[in-house]
Image: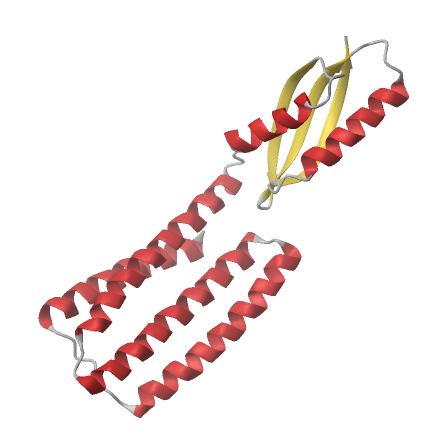
Length: 204
């Protein structure tokens, strides 16, 4: 969440600076030192992005995801800065300001999406309505299920632990009802946002 807030603050500062330079004119000047710094920064940030992306895929951790997006943003900002510096050779100074405005909006959007995701996890928000509807659709594929009583969820990282209570025929054998519950757990757990599913059977 702190990363997302810092990204939003930086985006507003970048937007302000870009608008000012667009109005007053850019003072960006070509130097080989800036070119070298930009190239080194881009290579470093690409390496950090790929490293955190690999770690994020392995651990599925929201902090790693935020860091990954932050490195990606830094890489793109620096890359466009490099292009802006090169364009000053041809007397094109306004490109830096236009790119700055576009990038600031994009960084702000990325920061807001990370903030919302972090907030939802901190506040124990339940699964969204679409995921809940997908769970119900899966339940309805089982003819033996008479009724879905409850679907309760709690966040586990960026995914959810889901508890489902279903009604089955009381005359069904214990083995059959548990087999059905196990199959339902496996099917629901295949959904992207579901970490684990626990099914409770109520006989009627």
